[in-house]
Length: 322
Image (cartoon, rainbow, N blue to C red; front, side):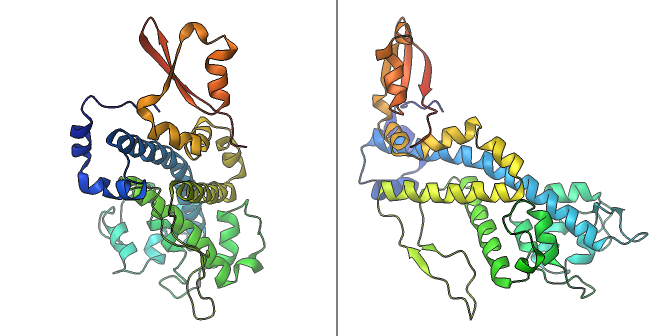
């Protein structure tokens, strides 16, 4: 997480593109150039660590959907592969759809006569492909896909495990909206867009005739509100991981990545980056002194450590936010 001010700040900001930084200047109350660069680095640091979390979710979600759809579509002597891993997409996805086009790009012979190993095809599909599968109601032979019994196997640690719960379109919609939230976040990170920039906060469901979508909160209008929204989105993302795998979520919540994000998504973390040119410096000899790094780290601050006037390290607090 080492960031420092560039030697030529105007040139660095010009390289990042003035139009791209306009939203930063407007939202963060016309910061100075050093502050603007610092806030940009803050966004970059958050994005990098969010992608690690999203990567965990994407891999597990992909593997679970591949397994469950393989079991659903498996036909001995017809499917290529075994019961748990086969070319289910040949029998589930309708030719001509966007999903079929994505599959077709990764197969030899096209969707219907593919000779490409299924594990290769599945590995090439990006996150956005997988949640859309939940909206397919039946296969090409018009056999209904039993999502009500498949979802508990895809999300085995969800609090709702009964298939009767998942027969509700409303409950399936809420799950899809949560998956879509992570997809939107992934796209913003991948395109180097501001992850702190949000619109209205709405209820987690899809607009239907009997279920209108309600606005819960307006767009964030201050850095503090943006941080609060980021923490909400982060909590929902880690909750989704826990639905997929309580074990992986448990490991993640004690990981360095989580501790880093917990600090980054705090006022202290934001203030550190906004004031990136004024980070406190301490001498190496003071590390063992109570007045050295101890007080700074207890205050959730980042410090630079010097030895003989040479920068040798940067430390930041892993103390959880109260």
